[in-house]
Image 1 (cartoon, one colour):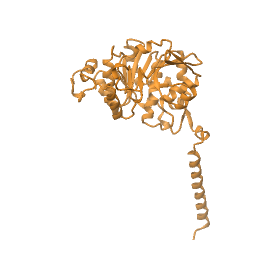
Image 2: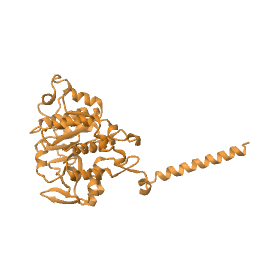
Image 3: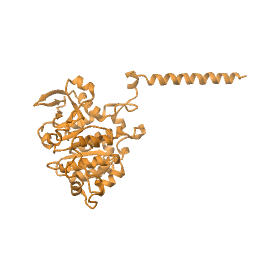
Image 4: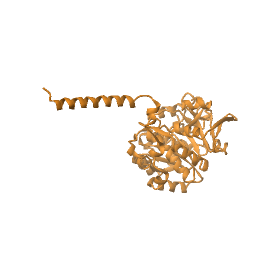
Length: 350
């Protein structure tokens, strides 16, 4: 027979369990009010610019920037899992006419960094912890890559350089500089995106900005843009860390208004920041918008937009945008840099 003390303890524990079940159901509800109480601004998760500027990878980055031929650099960010996709991107950039200049790879692990460094490719190693405060238990996953891309762009802008950021599978078939030069007043120029869907509807436009291929210039207007983005809240447990979401929502926060100029979607924000979105006919995004029969003849940038490594390889091959030979690592092992990139391609890219 249970003592009174034991009975009281069981009643207390039963109450605790009931309370926990209630709280779990409450916090898991879809109520926006509840979810908003667990949101954090990006600035709480991303380390400050002043903190990041003292990082080793920034010192390495500065050396490459100082050696660049202009105030604009092209950047691709990846880890060793996507090594083959990144090397294909580099080979394509080397074969563009004219070849893409001042390319920097941002490696998220030592493995990719060491390999590219051995081939004398401009590469910096970016540890996640130097950019993201991991005390918030931010996931070391695709979400962190998306967060880091925007952080890298902001740092490069802060250092006074324009930055063109590319997905590793947003393959440069023709040098896109003429597309950028056609919009000299634009502060941001991007390929065409299809989400966030709610912004497409609210803006009543055909496209959002796509992070897969985007140029952000360094000036006072884009500095305000980055500050605005830092204030955007992230939903715990990290439901809206997508970089394209924040790339566009920052424009919404700055009161962008859209129009069309010679078939190009253009926008202007309240602070004077100007945006241009390139049509899919020049920089395609998404396999339904990228037509293989056109391939290299039409597009400046081919971006089939698959997420897995296998999908990215297959998407590139569909657009005749896969440059690498079979067993490309075994080709001319002694070569490095531009000469190496010229030799590891097939004679007729598939």
